[in-house]
Image 1 (cartoon, protein in one colour):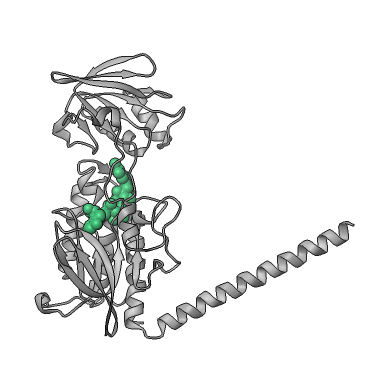
Image 2 (tube, helix red, strand yellow):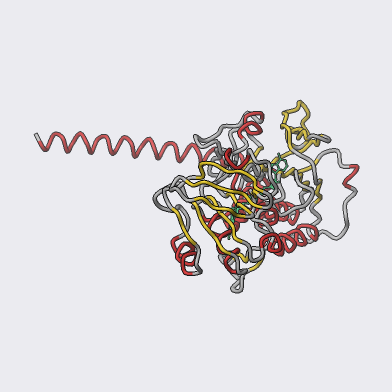
Length: 361
Ligand SMILES: Cc1cc2nc3c(=O)[nH]c(=O)nc-3n(C[C@H](O)[C@H](O)[C@H](O)COP(=O)(O)OP(=O)(O)OC[C@H]3O[C@@H](n4cnc5c(N)ncnc54)[C@H](O)[C@@H]3O)c2cc1C
């Protein structure tokens, strides 16, 4: 099977004169980088468009200093920054091409057919013709904001985990009860800081072991508590909590989740799930043929290895559509078979129910 043969390309292709790309990938986070090296290794011309000026996605921008300990084969952990640098090196060696500081606006269908019907990926700076698109744009990086703190418009209110030097030894208020909030708390405590964690719910959504470690390291956790008021007083932020406590602290980290970039997805006219993420079929294809999606952009399980695995799978399905004229037919046949089986099972279970009802009478 040629599908799984990894080919190392020797020469840098003259990408400026390509009439169209085989694959355009949106987003250079874990899913996009893994997808890009998978298609490039198979000899497909691959372009990655990334809104930020550097690759890496969330590990690089949201938690560059955190030791990530749950990735297989890294028993001592690895920082988000190093992980991104290593993955980028691999993609570069596979001759993946990048456009940074460029943002997806929309994807148009065109009349032009070259091996495949071509699509036009329109960005805020240019446009690119291509055969397949993989959306790997993650959470689109819109952290959910807390209006009471946002109003202060202060650099002391952080919506990403600050770098180590930003908070060394400080007293910090962390708002949120998920894994990201607990991660932030643990990083501060590990560097001699003090943490007060404010959680709206009665219980925390984050990992129980992380909560236990926060408490063991001296972190104070207020559950069923909200930030009611906040004001800037010189170098400090004075915060009133719903449990009656008043705190004066130099920094607040807010980690209360992310807002999906619904507007971008709606512009693409692809089917979305109820939570606003992108719906896909079992082959990672969206409701628009030739547009695939992988990683946080659609997934319930938001983890780096899952984003890698999905990026690779989406890339392989895109590759199959390009390389095997029979694949699409096989795929449709498979879909039909599954549908027929589903109908059959539904008929059998309806008959069983009837028989049970009759024998009970
Ligand atoms: C604080 C925190 C800690 C975490 N810790 C861990 C951990 O310890 N272990 C673990 O496995 N996972 C962890 N995760 C989850 C993990 O980071 C994500 O699941 C993973 O980054 C998802 O990868 P992705 O490629 O799908 O999306 P992302 O990492 O979000 O990458 C998407 C990329 O697309 C770009 N983009 C967005 N919109 C556009 C556009 N319109 N045009 C062009 N580019 C665009 C973005 O700039 C970004 O670079 C953590 C997450 C957070 C928030």
